[in-house]
Picture (cartoon, rainbow, N blue to C red):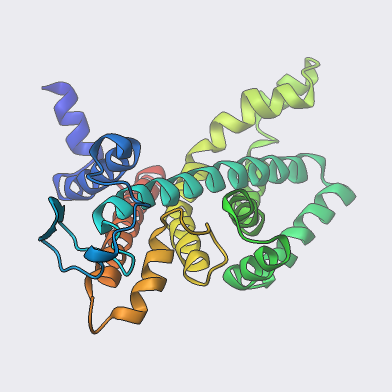
Length: 280
């Protein structure tokens, strides 16, 4: 009962529906090989552009089929793997790099701190999606390149937060005492600074995750993301735009999945921010 009360205080019941959506989407991505009704890359030209619920030769297309007769539900389930994996790895890489550079800039000061923060200003001065498109056009499309591009364009967000938080902590008595007693810079940063700034960093993580999903979908929509035949929500949307009037389900369902995922992540991210800032 006590644990239930604490959970209710930290996560109000009105947010449980968004948690449920995330659990369903993450579970579908993890269990894709087990729950996908068909091979997402298997083509069946006799079943192309079939409406949701149509059955062709013992194959039921619950959410319809695409222009090559591939089962849309299976492609959306496997597409969740791509979107969530790209977003998670991009956030992990950009968060690690940005947090480390922000802490180093604040701790070192001088030319080191100035150079790092000017790099942050330069990257932030260019629209993120434009920078991502230019970079991926140079490196080429592909799973690894998309992760690298998204991490490169988003690390300054973490660096600024880490920089400001570290500046506020580095002169506190317990930090100064650690330095006086001979603790190394690495030990002070990892043992005393990082645990105290992880809350604000996690707020950025939750807000950035949905943006990474959107960026990946945008790049795939433009043909610069994960390449066919690997299913991706953005690529499915791109293909579906040619059949909006004749096969609306190809564009509607991946768009709906993207909407639900990003909405849920953003709502929960706002709640995490309010909790960290002590508003609730």
